Length: 178
Image 1 (cartoon, rainbow, N blue to C red):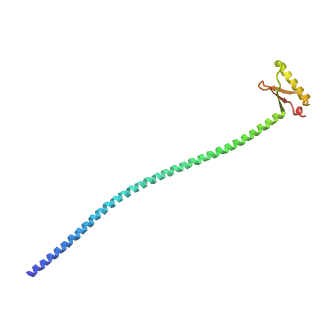
Image 2 (image 1 turned 30 degrees about the vertical axis):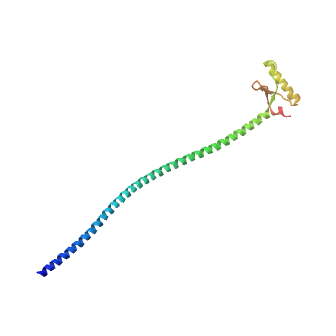
Image 3 (image 1 turned 120 degrees about the horizontal axis):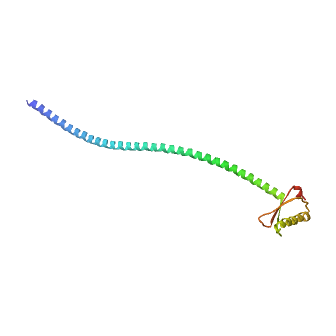
């Protein structure tokens, strides 16, 4: 029996040693599980932050799409405005050419008027209204025929704004040629 007791004691001691080893191993496992819980909590926090970042990324992508759409609309508007400005610039060039053409025509008309008309200064009106025209006409005819030596037939004569400015227009070019 002693042998049996000894065996039992050995077995019990062995079981106790094993139980002690198991307790140590269980404590190590529990410590690691505690660390795993901590890692899991950290992982969950990271996962939550990642979800927020992905959500913000999604919002930013939507904002980028909206911005790109607005930029495309603005580009379309700018192209339209540029086309309008270009058309206006073409119209301005056309109007400038027309203005220059009218200015040239005006200068030609003015030069023609100067060729066909004479302007005299300093002839005062004298006498009554019926005598004035005849008196001025006579003085002018006398000056043109006798002083200038130009033979004239009919002359249109008028004063401008009751000034001493007198315009004379001839009926034909031959009347004025010297």
